[in-house]
Image 1 (tube, rainbow, N blue to C red):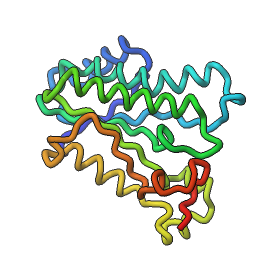
Image 2 (image 1 turned 30 degrees about the vertical axis):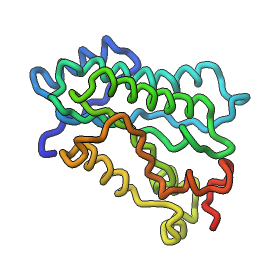
Image 3 (image 1 turned 180 degrees about the horizontal axis):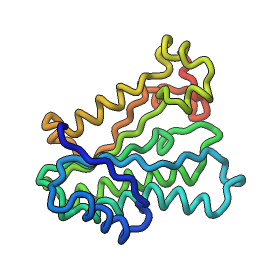
Image 4 (image 1 turned 180 degrees about the vertical axis):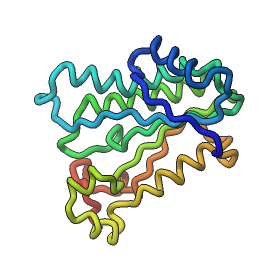
Length: 199
């Protein structure tokens, strides 16, 4: 990926997003898109305000659909569109936000329908990571180095490698998938409330 552009925009406003994209990429054609919407809330529904529910759905589900619609005329045949979701859309901690999980789940459903609509023309996939050591993770889990050593947490490189794979020709046959990158923890947990892997 030698040529790339970074666009920061309000993806909840489809018309403005389309104008921004036209202004930034003009007549260029796009091979790959990575969407990483910034919204992270882990409040129980009883503690969540109505505007927070709307924000989660807007920034993730509506934003994803707006982005895809706004770039359709700019996509090359075989283009790969990747959305960074969360493992919380399927298996979650006991303090996770329903709206956050629902928004990620809506994107997974949208990816499947987009893959059906555009068949072999474009590829649409979701990466659902979990347990990766980010700055936020370090602030939450002060023993993050120990978790890395025990392989109950993972370096961010695993997500980057997955993105690069989905952008490459090696993944040409992969579309409409939710690829969970969490070391298998979401499957191996004793219960959805157990965030730490028990062996």
